[in-house]
Length: 258
Image (cartoon, rainbow, N blue to C red; front, side, top):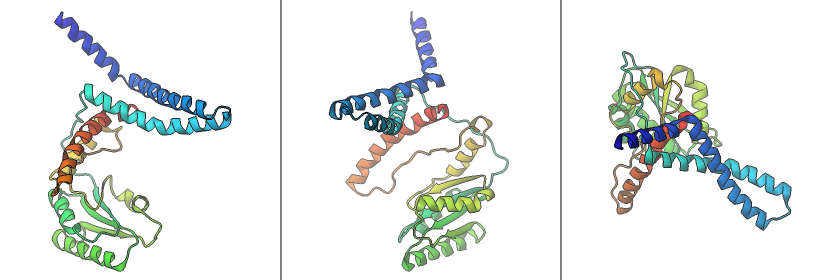
């Protein structure tokens, strides 16, 4: 009896692990949420046919992301997440750790020095990418750059700046990629407050270089809060751990099927 129960559980688990099952459930969830909104709109705006259809199409597009994450989280509760295989590397591929900054005034050197020192590998460079800012911020950035170059060398720490005031962090990333993407096989984007613990880059590269992971374009690392000195930040640590546990585990399963 127990053996039959285990066999049944494996069959059920195998059914839900199939990509077509995941996609069908995602479509059904999206249609269900959209239908509920359609009922509300139908009762409130009866007779506005064109408006109703347009609104439902827009809402359906937006609710797709909500259904996507809800389904991910549900899967994470019942299905073990995938452990990506790693490959032993005889040579480190060209990689850039890129900090995208805008109007930062403190703590940059300490965070960047820690990140690069803990992930100092051959063919891995550190980049500081900044946008338009007042002179006091630019002077601070240059001071950080000189200190980092003094410790790691001019050729290992690079700098890219744009004076265009309309360019935010996302646009700065696009500018940097247009200019330097051919020089690197991989890049790791970081915010000003990001820290990469020891061997993080090596572990990501081993996963990215494994033949079975070639279909994956983006690896999302787990996010943890450090240097929590207030009661609020300490509470946020536990919440962040719970959220990232379900988010990262679910993403490792759902993303390859979309």
